[in-house]
Length: 237
Image 1: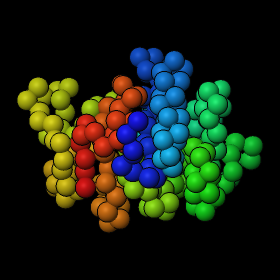
Image 2: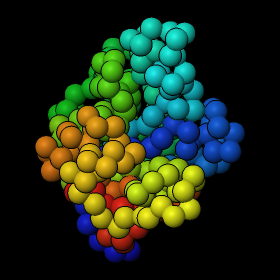
Image 3: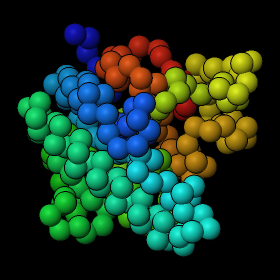
Image 4: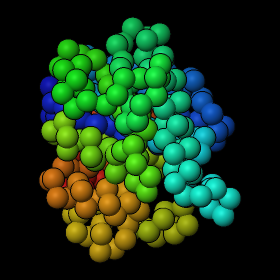
């Protein structure tokens, strides 16, 4: 097995990806494949952490607009991420990997309160750390949470595993002429309003010089391929 090019990473996984074709809840066959791949990453010596969205349960701005006040809607999303982290952590346990859930808000019995130092200690010992509840504050996405945690733990890169296989000049599902980028700068992403991450997350990654590798999660093996330096998806730097 090739030596990984990154020592410490944050993997951002969309909640929708965990649902598979069902669109809601969990496709546990797929979740298991993802967990087995991430376990391999940890076995390669990569210090691994994960942020999971909540789109398979609830998207605060989209689902709550006009129905639930924004702060409440965002807090509901935080709880959705905690549910996802608990499920994924349990799958890790079933396949023999040690996973720790840390929450950005106090939820007794769900996970321990997020600590930068403790998360680093866990990863250095080979555990996989799952960061739940976003940043702990409303108005911030899980994309921003992933970048914030990456900055705090001094991650070498953010692996943005999505339902699309990279960054395009336009939505390839609507425009067949959309062009995929192999590499693109943060400035261009912001200037062209490309849907990589929200602007807060993109700006934070740029300010902290953290590369973001965007790739498709349909093939979980892509996570290992990225860690081994294979040029797939799009690198934003």
